Amino acid sequence: MLDKKKIISCDWGTSSFRLRLVDVDTRTVLVEFKDSEGISVINKNWLSAQRPSTERKAFFLNILKEKIGALNAPDLAQVPVFISGMASSSIGIEALEYTQTPLFTNELNLVHVCFQDERDIYMFSGLRSETDVMRGEETMILGCDFEEEELMILPGTHSKHVEVKNGVIIDFKTFMTGEFFNILSKHSILADTIAKPESINLDNEFYQRGLKEGYHGNLLNLAFNTRTYGVLNNTSKENCYHYLSGLLIGTELKSVSPDVKCVHLISEGSLLEIYTEALKVLGISAEAKFTDANVAFVNGHVRLFKNLYKREIA
Image 1: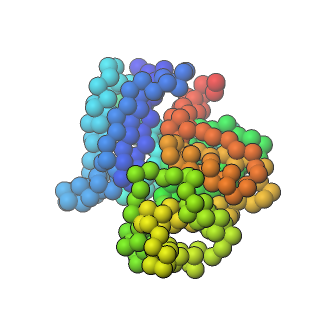
Image 2: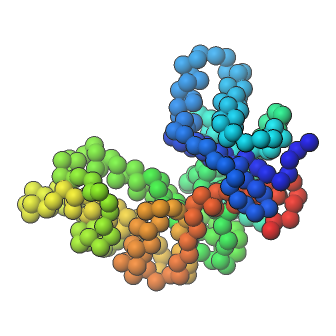
Image 3: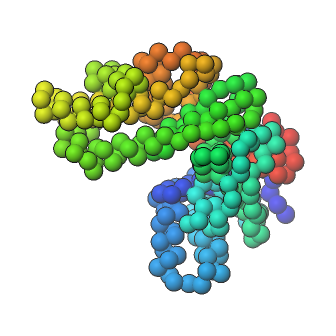
C-alpha cells in the first residue's frame, strides 16, 4: 500500500545527486544521501555500456533504486519518489517537454511522467519561456511563499531571475554569472593575475569597486581591468579575484528594474550572503526576502505530492 506520509525527494542535477526522505506533514528531512554522480556521469556510463536504447530507462531507474537503498531507512518500498532536475533532459532518464510559461503555481500543472515500479516514481519537466529554459529551479520556486509581485533570484552557475505576479510565474532570464567567472578566471588571459583567497571578503575594496563598476559600466571593457590592476598597479592576485567576482555580480544585478518592489533570494551558504550584501552596496531599495534553497526544493516536492494525491496543502 502506498505510503502517503513520506516522500523521497530527488534532486538529480548535471554534476550532483541528492536524495532526501521527507515527512510530508512536517516537511522534515528524516535522512539524506548525496554524491557526485549527476546525470552527466550516468549518461556517460550508459553510452559506454553500449546497450539497446530500449533499456535506457531501466538502466537509470536501477541506479536510482540502488541509491535509494543507500538511505538505509526502513519501509521505503511504498514511498513515492519525486524527481526534478536534469533527469528529464535528453541525457537523463527520459526527455520531457518543458512546461510553458505562464505557470500558475496554484495549479501546479508541470509536465510530468510516472514510472510504475514497486513505488510511484514521478519525474517533472523544467520550465520554458519564449527565449529561456530551466530544469530544477522551478521546483524551488514552487516551494516558496510569494508576494503579490516579486523578482526571485536564484544565484549560481546559471543564475535565474524569475518574475512572479499574483502567484503566476510570468517570465524569467538566465545569467551565466558563475560559468563566466569560471571561464575568465581559469581559461582566459586573466587567469595569471587571479588567485582564490581563503574566503570572500565582502568589505574588500576591490570587490565593492567591481560591484559598482559592473552595475554601471561595460563588462567587456572592465573585465580587462582585472589584468591591468595586477600589471600596472601590482594589485594582489587575491584582490583581482575579488574585483572580477564583484564585476560579474554587479553586471548581473544591473538587470534588476528600479520598479521591482521585492527581491526574493533563493540560495544557501555564502552565495546567499554575497547577493544580499551586493543588493545593499548597489543601493537596490526593493524589499529583500530570503529562502534557503534546500528548504525550497523539499517544499516544492511536498506541494507537488499533495497536489497529485489531492491532499490539502498545509
